[in-house]
Length: 149
Image 1 (spheres, rainbow, N blue to C red):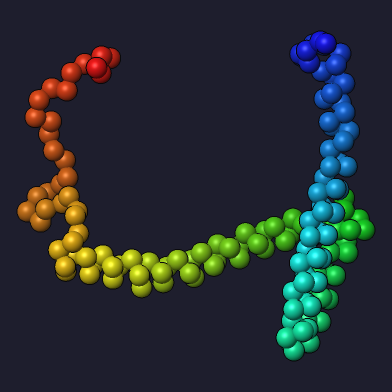
Image 2 (cartoon, helix red, strand yellow):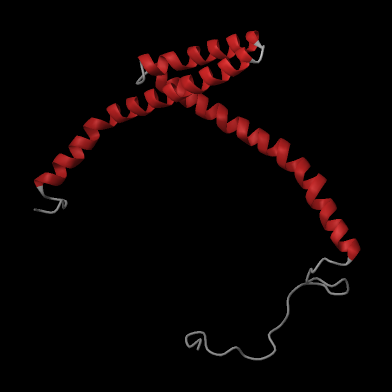
């Protein structure tokens, strides 16, 4: 068995096969994501429908079909474009949610907890009020850097 090294015919054939299969892999991944979106939207729509919010269920179902059918029918063109726009929308939504959730969490939980620990004397910070910095000069030579032990 020969190795797949550059310069050998097998290596060129392998690279050519991977380039030829790239559009098919992309289409398959777009189809798979569209199918997952459809299944999740059907689950959410059925839950909304059974809980009594039929208008919301119809809206979720229509939106899911509008965004998923192009990915199932034409994954290389319309499905790819919709997939890229949904990825960008998701990224922006997650950034907004991070700011909206983590900022109040910091100011409503972390800061009061730090102030409470300081008030109770449980804070073990290294900085002392009378000093200018945290730097401490070494008291004795630590030895050679190339011989640590």
